[in-house]
Image (cartoon, rainbow, N blue to C red; front, side, top):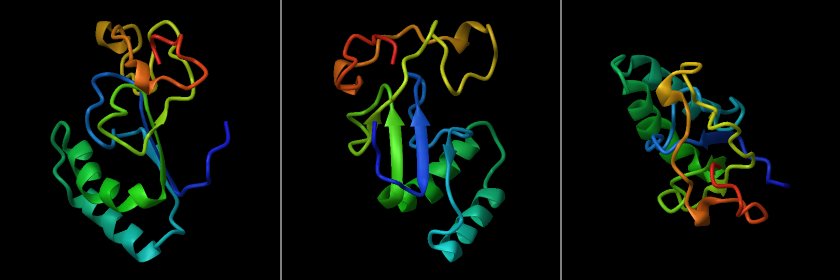
Length: 128
């Protein structure tokens, strides 16, 4: 697969990943609009430290700004995130990128991903 080079990369490969940006499932560069990058980083450090606070802060401060310069791989909510791309790799044995607990009951995907969210040449991937 050839993708355009973008500064930011966001990933979401579990049906429970409903926020625009999941903590730990994104990366970026400091060279694109460095003043804005520093401002966003400061806002993230100052955000609430409660459960889910990082995802709310990332969605509010980072996503809406970075979406003009990002690649976004989504397995379940491609209809919600219109500029997203299908997740490029198949989920093996129900595992997923953002799993926090090895062999924990909630650490496995059991829900079939939507047909329209599957990669063009891998419509047979039911866990994508």
